[in-house]
Length: 113
Image (tube, rainbow, N blue to C red):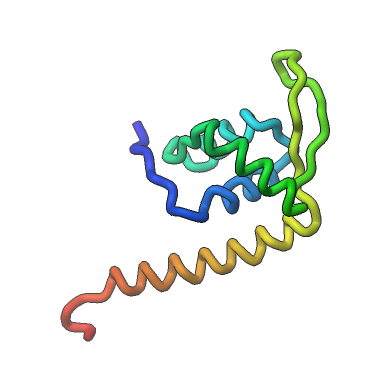
């Protein structure tokens, strides 16, 4: 069983953009996709997801349209906009630079300083 990981502040929007970049999803589908692509380590609460989806849509990073879900219910489906795709690229690069710097700092031994 995979141990859950806590989200760092500011990472939810990036993760939603990534999930939506992989294909058109409804809100609950975003939750499932994030759990899937994180190997079960990330479990987002609906109370955090839906305000974030609204915020990203207001910023023009995602857009939505109504459709029918797999269980035949009306659902709002989200997809990335060109602006959202650009933001995802920028944020991913920034995150990777930060993660590399932290890994380097944490990997430093006493003899290296």
